[in-house]
Length: 293
Image (cartoon, rainbow, N blue to C red; front, side):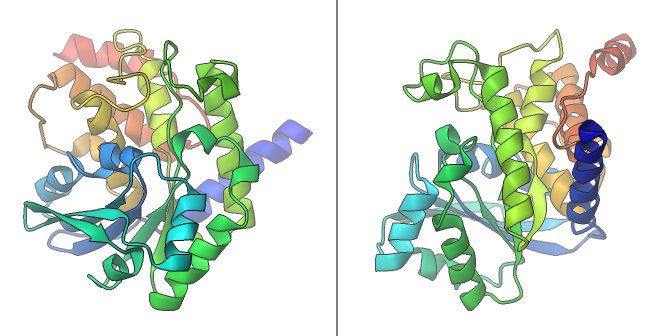
């Protein structure tokens, strides 16, 4: 009975969140600001703009970056208006970097449609690290952008051989870290009703890892995504979650990504959006893709 209730809850969360990312058409402009860290750099700065461009959707992407930045540090920054961020921005295919930027300044730079929030990677599976910081950040943004939609970015577990100093928090177990992130994400969405959309990058990465030909090869250092199909998988997830467009039909081909890796990443992202809290076994589908190549 508990299992049935859990499945139904997951489906309800999925339906309510997935419905927001719909009905974006060609020639629309979508403005997205990530309040993040290096994991948001991995997810939104390399391939996302090009994926949308291939479907004639224009993105304006902002990313407030501090390496290893936690919700607690974001909270401190808004409390004292510290200019501690690098503000990365992609607009009209041009990427700029503004140093010593405050969070408030970035919020007023564009008429943002979406603002995303995320926890630092090693605390993403620990709900006790979210309070009171996440609620305060949400209120801070809402007071300045009352019509904005909020995204929760669910990040990924570390590689199995990661030497990250915080990995022992999860017994150096990738699966334990992933399921902790899933559980925490579900709790976040249940507690903070302001979130309109979930981007399940963590499940997309886990879907890719479950593909035998890919395996645990998506990280470049044990926790950050590789610049090729690792980052591309996360970007595909963001694109489909935000637009509602099936990314498996997208024509953008990244450099240094094979046709198999591209199709695998698209499928991994697509099924993560469909089932954000469950790893999907794509090996049968990927075998069909291999035969088609």
